[in-house]
Length: 200
Image (cartoon, rainbow, N blue to C red; front, side, top):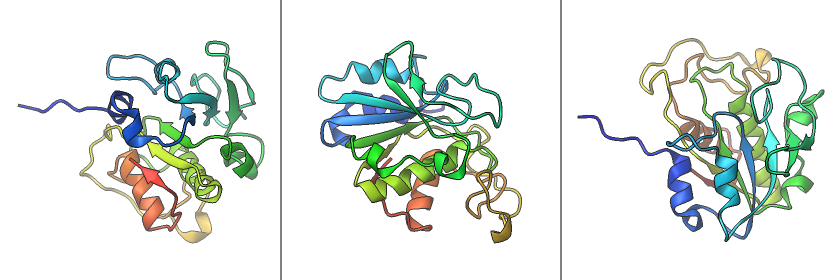
């Protein structure tokens, strides 16, 4: 008999003070940021009385996943929540990383995006870039873990050579890495020495 998987998001929402510090937070989310019951995470975080949701941060394709591949995401106001959306996928390399001044306004930056298990998807590098800025700004990075949909056992492919590192291969990990997004966050933090205040 298989055991029920409890998503990191659901664990966090059940006991936010166990994972979050201070009183403010930002969310890095997209259309996959759902509870096990299919409820969008933004609305759930807005209901937490002890923490104020200050801003949303949009990866490639935007927070609703409607933007085309490799098309820049712009800063805007979320029509549903009224919160500011800050782009993490703009028209230059610096736009892929939030600025320390932006993150200094929040005590916690929560990342909740479903990864696909492949090195090529940019969401895991958006996570790594956010972690770097969190280390600089003193913001806590909280990663809501989710299962790897193509399993956490099989690892395939070569490592990226240093001369080929890019936003679709920012670290030397295999094509099929066999890790969850939380495990990747720990790898980035410890093995690649980002050294931010990380909670998974």
